[in-house]
Image 1 (cartoon, rainbow, N blue to C red):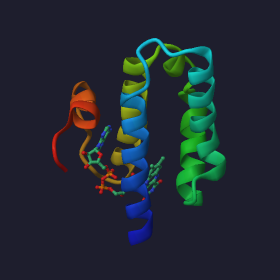
Image 2 (image 1 turned 90 degrees about the horizontal axis):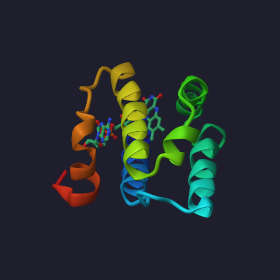
Image 3 (image 1 turned 180 degrees about the vertical axis):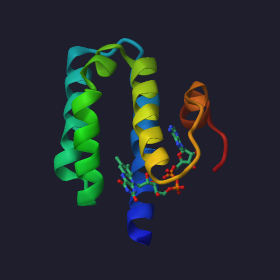
Length: 109
Ligand code: FAD
């Protein structure tokens, strides 16, 4: 439905932008907050089937190490999460080498 798409677009904007502005060397507090944000999504994301799929994906691809690694590992992890959804929905994969350019340095949608 249209609202799941709109919610998705805006949520990806928030998540990718936040990952791309995550520090390269985050503090303990920043890492812990980021991990809480990500691990909350399978419980709170207001599309329940999306949340369930995300929960199973995160079991095999936990965010902890990505967060520990700082900005570039987090950006890539999130890009791969999004690509898994893209694949499931029959959308094109995004080239994760371009994720910083897309979400930090910027080009128009
Ligand atoms: P979106 O997929 O919303 O992408 C927005 C923009 O992000 C694109 O224009 C592109 O510039 C950029 N982008 C695309 N791929 C990547 C990537 N891999 N890395 C970085 N940037 C990228 N919908 C469902 O129907 N079923 C689901 O199970 C589902 N699960 C979701 C789970 C989460 C956590 C989120 C946030 C959304 C989910 N959605 C789901 C919504 C879905 O992913 C799309 O947001 C929605 O279908 C709208 O797609 P779109 O084509 O407008 O672009």
